[in-house]
Length: 307
Image 1 (cartoon, rainbow, N blue to C red):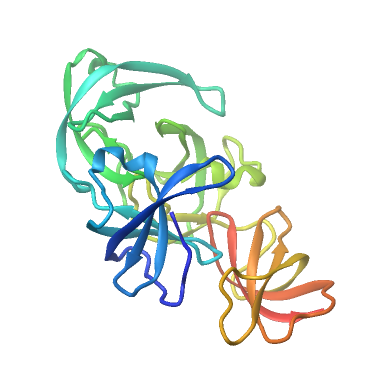
Image 2 (cartoon, rainbow, N blue to C red):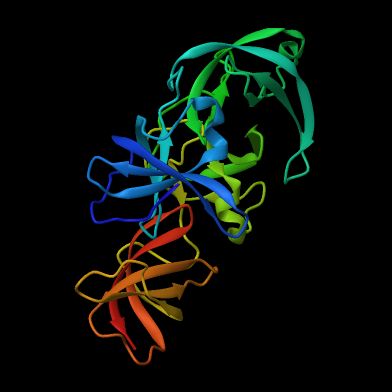
């Protein structure tokens, strides 16, 4: 879900009240979206298919948490689940298991579980195969994303000895753990404490088993959350760099003061939009910007100079 109007900047991790205005179809595939209006009169869209079991309807007022604000300022919302919250423990029906191969070619087992709302969740049992035969399991809800419950089994020690993260000490890649369907994580060992790093964000880093990494610690360790950021292969926080210019874009809704988006590309292929106010530039070769943050391998940039 992303913002269509960002005059008021919602804060990541904060919950706000929204009204459901209408349902629209959007190209290219005709998917249906809810149009939401925040308490600040800004509008957002929310993909309808993820929330069929939420009993959402036009005219209803709902609570949504800002799940993420990406490097381009787009806002992604997660509506409050109708029956549960992260941290709670609920009964799940065991519907069987799947044997999979992860990106390192290692075998893993995922239990296929049904939650009390008859939605499917997958859970890695870390070779605790006695769970396969149980009809019901009490599982902890770690996170709710796109209407699905991301869960863990309270009897499994996912974090090893669970020592606190030591900022500055290296992490060693010991393998890959698929915590849930299509959610692969590198497992990182730091002095016997296990940590997790989402695989898909670092495909261009060419990580392999046994690599030693230096990471910034962004938050306390939590399953299914991004809390470590490896050192970027090309960029450092607070430094200025020249970026390749891709194109200039006109925003959909112009204000009285004209502004444009300058689209730039970094050295591993990520593209960013930088807001540029004033007269439209006639020629752009490259753009200098300061790296003010790096999350999930992507940089957050501040425009400095156009060449």
